[in-house]
Length: 289
Image (cartoon, rainbow, N blue to C red):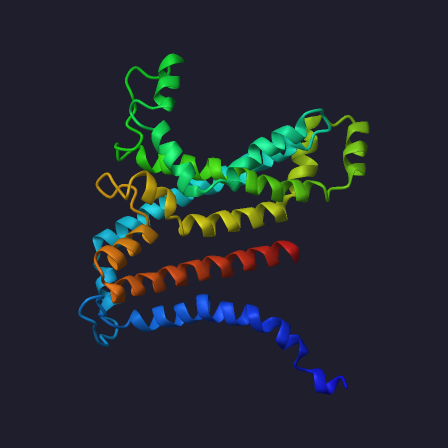
């Protein structure tokens, strides 16, 4: 009877496998195939071998977008590894009203990134709320051009991403904090260890695997950033906030160069895959020193 029902698990898995095949694996295979062609939306195309990848090597706009993405990752990753942990420690304190603050910090997560970027775009204008507050506090003498100054625009995009992600990674840290035995804190307190000492000697070492996980998630998401840059600046000014995914989108949908954009997508896939494998190696080494 058991042998006749070997197919039962596959029947349950079939809907998910079909969806993954149609919306994930087939697009990946099709993109890989297109990357070796000069396919254009209007005129079609044919096989060109490695020409697209040679073009990428000499494309200054591609390297500019890659550099912007790297800068964005360097800004966002440390912030979203450290700040959510500090917030999680604060809201995990057994004080009245902490549930309210958990909701406050988590609420941006459920908001649409497009809506959040539009609101932040209004606040970061030269006559927006941010400059108004900074002016009232005496921090600035003239409005900062958050979205039009090449030196500030990537910082502005990073601020939106950090604000949006704080609550999500806070929840992950809260789950990790709940796994730390309270006996350790009680014993340390009896030995005279203060809050800072307990944080440094107990919390941080035991939270290290969770911090590696969060760092990996943040890095992978940062490499694929698109919505914030697209809605806030469209890649400007002077391509100062043009990220890699945004450049791929522009070449594929505005330039109609499906073959070239597919080649860049394949490069991005390799980068993300490499970062994923690297994170797994680091995690395994920390788990088995």
